[in-house]
Image 1 (cartoon, rainbow, N blue to C red):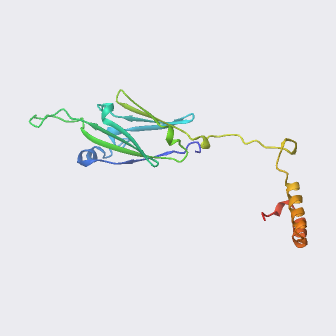
Image 2: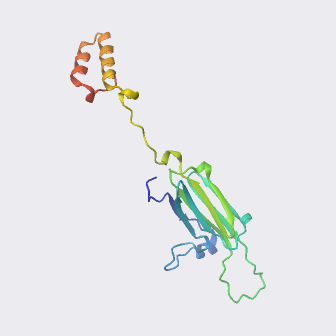
Length: 181
């Protein structure tokens, strides 16, 4: 994963009328889903997500992975009863779902999650194959690939088969244009 590339693509999965209304973008707001605002960043070899779930108990939160899509579902139950006279309701109740498409450079088998103080924290390690690493460069003395010997071996093989034309072609071509037989 190149530095600075966002390994996540976040998209909405509203459930029912309440979450669709709650999911409308608020002018000037960085989040399109105020009930499940998500911060994401990379620190070292991990990608972190912090999901705000105020008033949602951990038992009402689920985290599912299907393919490369991580889905967060949560439900907050309202306290109002049917015969209550409501003066104001600013705290939404209902069910919400957000999905995050995870990039190919993340290790989906090692995802960890913790729900504490109304925040769901998710750690996704970067896959070993995506981490920067040095590739050693060998020399002839330390067991490098010997291109010259390889060509000589192929010429000898052609000569043993009695293929004089192939042998001459390989001698003229040299190491730069060697083809796999």
